Image 1: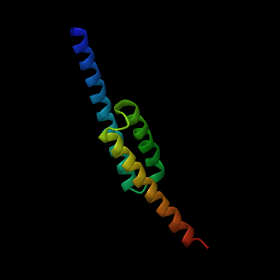
Image 2: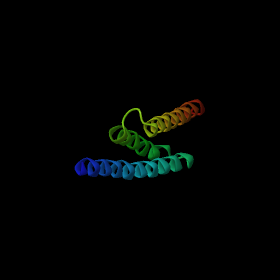
Image 3: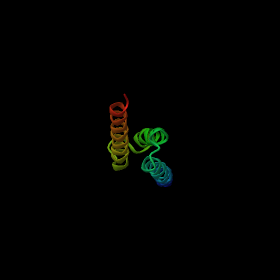
Length: 89
């Protein structure tokens, strides 16, 4: 019984610690994205998505938020590529 409780506490602490780390990575990626540094933000957002998939699982809300952030970042990068292609001679 005590082993089960200690394992549950360990798992909860592990997930809680990493979740705080994911939120910090997400905040840094969004800050870089907001400042127009999309190339620097993309590796952070991808790393956050991969880490949340491994630790929290595919169906966790934080994983869905990371997927959404990556999609928005790629959408913005694609818009910049199309704009630059139109303006170049």
